[in-house]
Length: 405
Image (cartoon, rainbow, N blue to C red; front, side):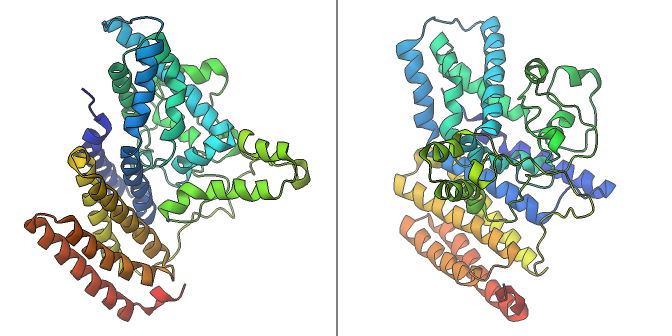
């Protein structure tokens, strides 16, 4: 039986985020910003929802090769579990490394690196489209004959392990730094400092980076994020912006070979007529500024309410999608995604957000009536949405600057 360990761990993720957040406030560390954290969590919610529509098909890709082309029949002994654990971690390393060295793969993976902060919410900042190709790297395990459920289990735990290493609260772990991927090693991986770029691709075991020459110890201060900042809290744009850059480069490249190389070469590569390869710039400490657009403080409560609505809707879908009708699943996902876009747009105070928000609120009430929720849920949801309409209308009256950008 397939068990979604990632989904089951979501409550634990939020508890640990709460613990780190409390520690952050107690020590006055400034590891968290509301806008950045909501953006990170929005990506995680979106990734889980989009994953619903592809995870079954991708799992059956592995399963098909195992059932029809496997070379051996691997027993389910403790030693096979250990070997498979090492195999999963090995192929994760190569998937992760290639995601940094091939533009078409980086276009998806870049989402995980966009945050300019480093805390446990960053662990949940995941690409909506990476799952379309990541599974291909593990197919040799199916060919050898490792059971699909065993693979799915260990792959999930490989992902779960990487949650806790997204923290600045833990500095060094002594001798474990030589074997395991630790917070220190992974901070390096998220750095935009030139010496830290494309280093420490490990999942659980750092030994792969040490063996294959991609290891870098944490030394000077790490500046988190990507070399060309996203500068947006919009979750949809976060998943599409690098594709937009690639397409623009393709349009400026008359040679077919250059068009192809745009997708196959590493990030920073450009055809000769566009200047050739561009190295990552050194961090200018004096000019370095994190993306942090101003927004009216009175918007905070409204944004938090809408994010909680999106989180509740997304969680309900995640834990009950197998029992939902396809139409309900699609409409519920659309509503959740639109709500996440609302949160990002309000935190940037975008002009288009005014009409968009009224449209979203009206659409949400229509959708819930179409979906025929139980009367209790229907009353609660419509009440929240009506409160939102009134609240948002009043916010524009007391905060006219919301409509100036």
